Image 1 (cartoon, rainbow, N blue to C red):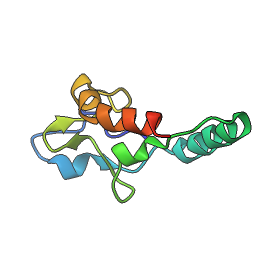
Image 2: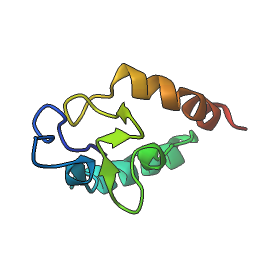
Image 3: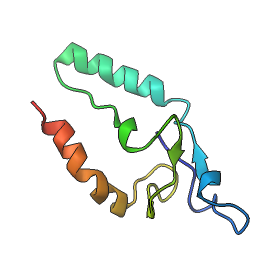
Image 4: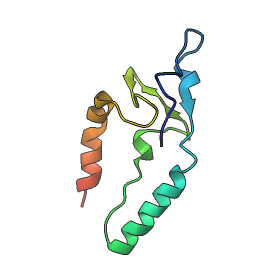
Length: 93
């Protein structure tokens, strides 16, 4: 879904709450498209929003872990943090 860019959002005058935003404008359409293709091909689509957004806000930092290093690409640290849940979602029966 994306988030604010940690390379430009944090400043000396703001805090983590100033680096919140909603999912990208194209996110809902992308998820719907993926779900449609999954249904048509008999595979499972997983909506990733649960790992990135809360109450329609997508933080750039979760706890002390940066989520995206540029607003679009995951940091290795956050990827490792959510990996067990992602694997469980992918492999569930």
